[in-house]
Length: 241
Image 1: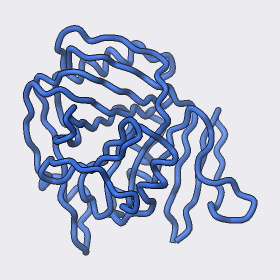
Image 2 (image 1 turned 90 degrees about the horizontal axis):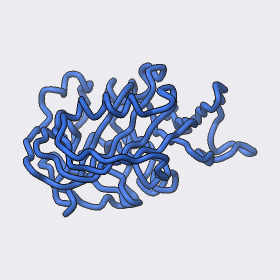
Image 3 (image 1 turned 90 degrees about the vertical axis):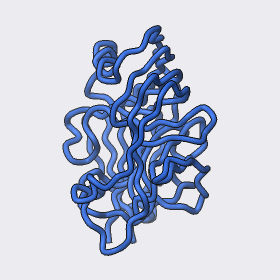
């Protein structure tokens, strides 16, 4: 299987076949979100892993995604890649494990602010939109603190033949958390991404003790520290047969 690389920076789109002589390897630019595959492919049922955790880790120390056969949620934080299983339990992902979809970056905060009192995640997103200087860039967002309430989900590994993600959407295990401390790992993608990535905010969570996590469906946030890393480059690795 070949992997196609698509890079977007300052309005210039570049496509190259990774692995061919003379072509640069996946990634490399500073302030870059590195992405494995696309949301549309994932939603259509492309659940087989196409990049290893080791490869993902080489291109970022912060981000999110999923695993081969949709075997749980990926949380990348402080350089460690975690796997949140369908029951919410967490382990450090093996370097040989693979992913069909992930977004990571090298997190260096550009701005930060505090949330002194609890607010809904929707309200926090609106607050962030008012502070971000370029909504056409990608933003990695780290929120450390308390979640007074949260609804999270994960998913168990799927078996072939795979159903599409829409069919599976009602089968994901969900659970509620209360007064838990941890970190929200988020990526805000601009609206122009279309079906390549989730436009707007995408959040995963991991507890401070690294025992619970998942994809955030709804939450109250605060008190918390919010840090934002601006990324004006987007590098996409597409699986092609």
